[in-house]
Length: 439
Image (cartoon, rainbow, N blue to C red; front, side, top):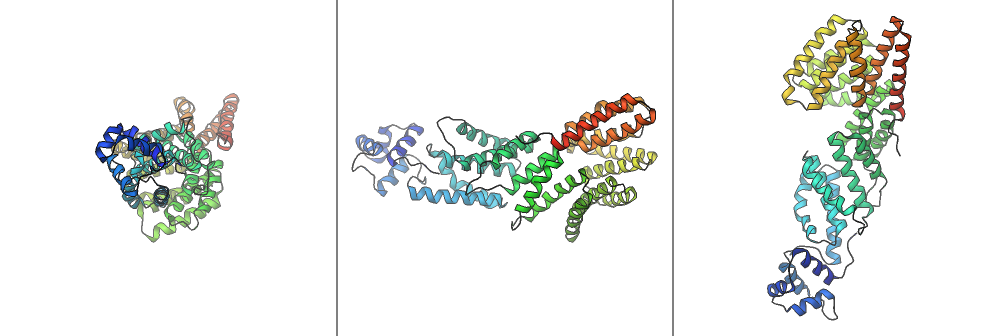
């Protein structure tokens, strides 16, 4: 992992990197330039004593830098301990450790250790949502990785692609998040195995690109790997995402089992926001399985709990609206749309742009679904709603719109248009099952 360069060569590279001349170091250490030169070349009988080495390190402004093998072995152990702190979410302890480990930056020949340190810093920054600073750290490592003269270790490549995946996930570029996540899994070593967090993120990214079948594979692996992990919070997240996947692929019993387990835990700590969110998801399962009245009961329970959580409150209106359409309660649905749009307008300034657009598009979609007799509504669903939901990965919503339009054209006896919608529906199903398959 660390360099096997002779001590003298290390001292020379540090001196040159810092722009010091032999004369500068000689004057600072009260040593002749000739002696400094002999130490750097590794001439016979020129190895500095521990006292001399400490003086040279002071002159080079690296008093605490690890240069000797035993120092580097200790440093590497501490670096992996930092990694353990990060992966077990002990972020404050990790932040407290980082400062002491930054000394490695002054050793240009220790690229693996520098890369792992920078990538550890990046992971902490991503956790703090300081993505731009994280990108700076990752980009520095990328220059190393792309340098033909450098052979990065499997550990460096694992952490590099893991961080790239995390950044892309945060930015909403889920295809790149998947690509780098899969590369991460290809660089396992004795120190780094398939990360439970990475498996969960790959599964989440597949779901967000509308590929629930791929998502299930990685989420189930993640939950299995989390056994014995101290971070049960992450198991709950993975199970929540997996429940959404099961709902989309119509494995309703598995979805209910996971959601009821989560609901029990949320009620145990009286977490109203989480209880409301889970009730919405359970309502969605009931609606998708055709139990519309039970779905409405669950949605109403959820909305009572979520009045102070406006974004979730608005999303609850959307799910309930779809169920009302199935029950052909169009007047009630129009009232619900008006209430939901008022909430969206209320939170416009405090809501992420993507979420605001998604909520707006969803209420528009509901309005046009209950007005299918209007050709403008039909055109909107075909030309705006279906492409939009396909583009953001909510392909199950696009499928439901296709089914509604298919039924509409069947009633209108418009065979060609019905066949066109069936073709789109087939394409969406293929995207859900096979789109973005692993290379």
